[in-house]
Image 1: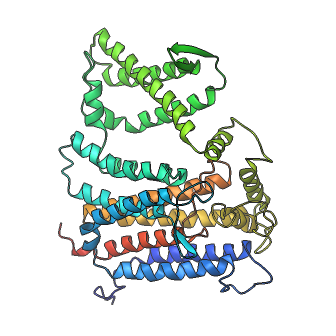
Image 2: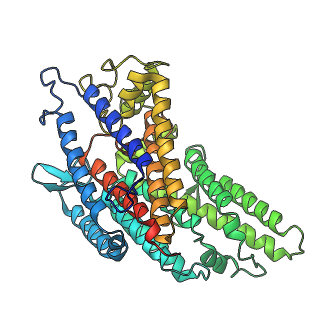
Image 3: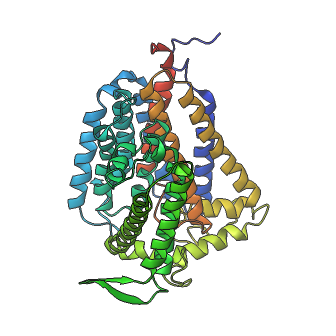
Length: 465
């Protein structure tokens, strides 16, 4: 009979086994990709695989310490932890740039990325805020505070700039939506300020997903069509391309469509239609200027990566070399792969795929094990995500549930975007593959994140409903 009072009595061993599998597979792939025949010992700390083993050991040590701490501590000290991480995000902006970004804090010969731990801090504070808020009575204050918890570290991370981690933070918006926090109060205050417009309280929340999809589609069309239109002077000192008209039409059609579906059974005066058109126009202009100035604020290499991904530019042997070679490496694996240690395109020693040990670690794995091996790896990640959702739904505490959903969304974003980068389905924005990629900050932050989840879950029965 299992002893629930022991340290490991209530731990979720299914999740632990899945995570151990990922770490072992990642370590084996790194050893193969970075193998140096002059230093074959996997424990040789002068090589990448030796250093990774040290980081795995350090991560397990801190993970064990985290697991020993009572789960109530994480809720109690969520805000101080968040504050410390924000302070580190500010400090790192004054550090010397590494590869064009000020994202590292050096500790001797080692370095850590505060942005990696900012995800944990934001998840803890978000869980604490939601668990202590009365979501039945939503107002502008609740929505703005919840959004601010996410937005503040996002701004600091964008200043580094770290586009990858910035994108990952948007995953928290889905957690807010899962917990019933929508932008209804703010959006309704804006929309209902127009004459004759009185949207129902649930209108925005009910159509959150389709509205979000329309915004994403509009943003992409805005970028793609920007080079196809003829420029003209729209307002003094503002040169706006003709694609504004196209996005205006799309946004108007979208808003009118939702408006008609929601209000088809009621008689509305012309001001309703006029207001809907105005809202569509405002949306279109907002997207246009956001994309324009947002692109301008990105680092040049980040802007180029997005343009390559969207097909706006082509340079397979130049700036887009990495992404093209990554796709070539994955494709060369075929169905069964080339075999362990036989990666000829994506190995570190071949250097055909830069960063194949970090952001592009999926390349050597796919080249060695092929489609079938990749399918197994993706299946393990899928099992991890499903297991965390299962863990989230069995929690008695709102704090535990929200934190678990934050974790599952962070993992999902990392896996989807990283593998997408490797196969050309996502722009190259520098996101590691969880428990797989080489890197101390990555393995340490993911390990701590998971051990906090395991600890919260192990004490779920101690929470009174």
